[in-house]
Image (cartoon, rainbow, N blue to C red):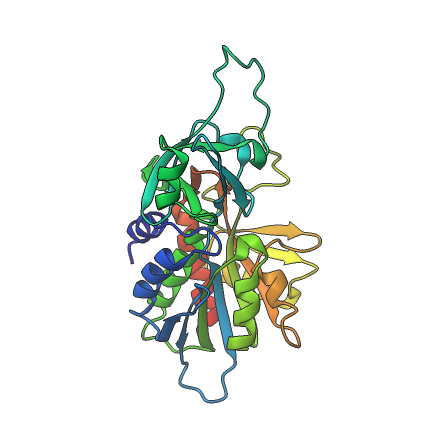
Amino acid sequence: MDIKSVLKDLTGCAGVSGDEFSVSEKAAEYLRKYAENVSVDKFGSVTGFIPSGNPDAKTLLLDAHIDQVGLIVTYIAENGFVGVGACGSPDLKTLLAQSVTIHGKKDILGVVSTLPPHVKKETPVPETDDIFIDIGLSKEKAEECISLGDRITVNSKFRELSDKIVSAPAIDDRSGVCAILSAIEKLKGKKLKYNIAVCFSCREETGESGAKMNGYKLSPDLAIVVDVSFGNTPDSSPKDTAKLGNGVMIGFSASLDKEMSNTLCSLAKSFDIPYTREIMPGTTGTNADALGICKSGIRCCTLSMPIRYMHTPVETIDLRDIDSTAALICKFSEE
């Protein structure tokens, strides 16, 4: 699988929390090449199943969330400007003067309004109530094509910064989807230790509800949650971040299964898969928190990839970290 090509395809689809169907259908197309019973549920999660052939095998869930952070239409002012709320937690300081698309009855282009520095000397980080979108229409015309509740994405594109480092919107967590797709492609024809259930879950950014629903539906014995974490930048703390290109980040947390974490570290060492440990003293902020307490409890571990500029339109990742994540999933899943 060409990870770069698939990532470009997936990040090119809109899928703000609660309205993921466009990207969910695209991800389901890819998953159908490898899995059985692939479907998109009425909430926007994608699921599929790969049997091991062993009737006594336990079921391993591979989960990555499909949604992205964005905005939602809350108000149309008398002058036609569009008021917004946050879906998830987009980095609000990056929004001023951005080009956006409102996904209404048709896609409507707009720009986030901002006062020029000649008029306003200070530009603090805005609150969502302070953000309005200029679509160049009157209120009457705006209401013909836009409804309250329509989702909004910032217009950005897939950029190749170097041979292995790329930048795009929604790398959180379309990169996790890519890692799982790459892993199950690598597993084709190999003997599996587990039945594999796959879930590209909706609504992670707004409370992990997609994972909660599918934890009950799929009832796995254990789960690997694939997500992103914080990449190192010049102004960040080395203690709290990982360098891009240093490999998959294996999670250790009070809410995760320590035995699974240790097993993944041992496998990475044995097969020379580059990795780092990610220490999260309490909860993880990922779907693992929801899955771990689903029903009578599901043993969980996280595998993360470091990205820069999380929750902005220019999230940046090293493709080699996606490949390392896929390789480790394979070694854990093989007999």
